Length: 309
Ligand SMILES: [Fe+2]
Image 1 (cartoon, rainbow, N blue to C red):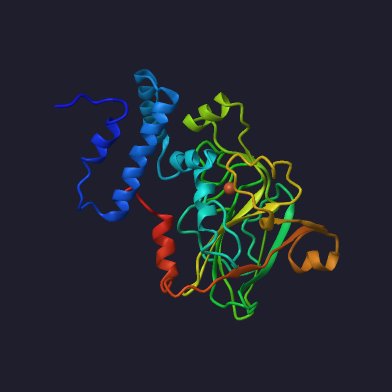
Image 2: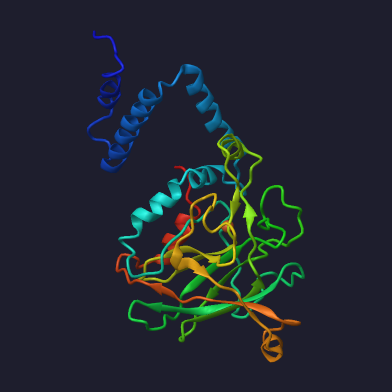
């Protein structure tokens, strides 16, 4: 028997992986082992530091539940989610660019009619009207597209977020809209605000320990799907946010930044049920066809509720 050395311990582990392991699992685990070993050699990691890391992972799991996804947030603040999205951009070329899902998505948002006020009549914040079209890569409107929308409330918390002050009803600032033949969508809300990602858990320890702020630029989240088309997972960012260049989770792309223009037309305000001037945000989403997405709704639902199994 040969003693393990810092050079051959990696091969000793890789040799244990059965040849008949499912190919993609084998590829990922082998690369994980190689890179993790290289990382330990590079920083000369001590046993105490490794133990500290193991306890950090335990803490990420322990603080998570069906309303708190600390693992997603960890991937977000380390830029892992952004990198995975960037890698997929070539497949999606021609469609609206993607951005992060983030830790606050909730499955099961209610279906809403166009014009619905997703703030559920909130008086806080600034009134906003968001609209646009969903079109294909030829510019033709797409019917039957579902837009699942969610955003932070004016108090800088998502309605179901752990630790939020319980001001909002279940599924406030969330809703699903389905386009008609003209491909148009429109709804009322309050203008999205900047908010900090939660820092009361292990991810906060990383941010504080490395001198980083926790703020995200104001944004609206979208999951957009239709059978036969690539699902779009994206965010639209307010152009006036001071955090566009320093998003704590690296989600901003130039093409996803939109202005909210103040509309002071009294008639328009009345038409949309606002008391006075309101902000307008407009954006057209472009979907790319994809024969393999024959059942996009089911794929989307599966992804949204993905478990670790
Ligand atoms: Fe968000």
